[in-house]
Image 1 (cartoon, helix red, strand yellow):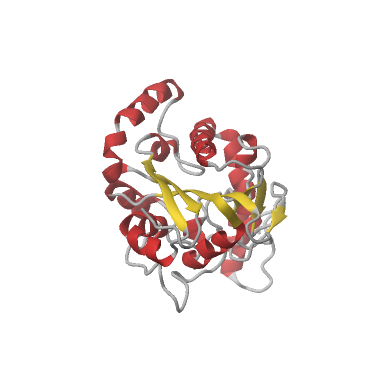
Image 2 (cartoon, one colour; image 1 turned 90 degrees about the vertical axis):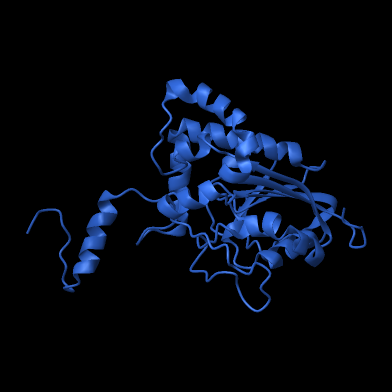
Length: 285
């Protein structure tokens, strides 16, 4: 028997292989690997943030776009921000997550926020909505907690023809454009934990079926729908993939990104969406 390997007294070869592989493979910053906890995913994401400068640059640009969308006020709450990246750009934000980590101010379920009615000026979600199996219920909870004129600002995946092909080939989170996002008698997808998802949910809600959303929740007015990220984001590798843009080429890549904006409908990977809390009887434009 090799030195240093655990003795498998149960005869379970799968358990032995899992214990060996968990020593050698890095933790995933996207979805849990076998034997990896939800908190370890967020720790791995924080570690990736620290060692991937292009990923930090991309998200800091996203955060500046988010700041520009915020309603006036001081009560900004990030939902699902367990790795704590937003704090550097918005120091006064209160960060929450379903999974407690050292980077959050409080732990909370997005479906049952521990906030009084109309207490928040802004709710911020970065890559969170597509992880919620009951997105309409969440939007109603956002209505409850936002003051009139308050805003819900979200950065989410956008499903374009290009991104759909790339996500299908190289991303662990599923894309199901046939899902019924307005489903009343159950979840949109079966959840096995906080990292279960359907990346198509934001595209269905805010682009393909936005008129139905307006009729179902008229108190949330769509203020911004911006498609974004054609080249730099997918080629950066995000938090886990290989970065395909060398350091010397990054300025040129950002210039190319600007030139490609007219093609976002077909090529974009991301979206920025802002909803504003309105009185229920306010007509929707």
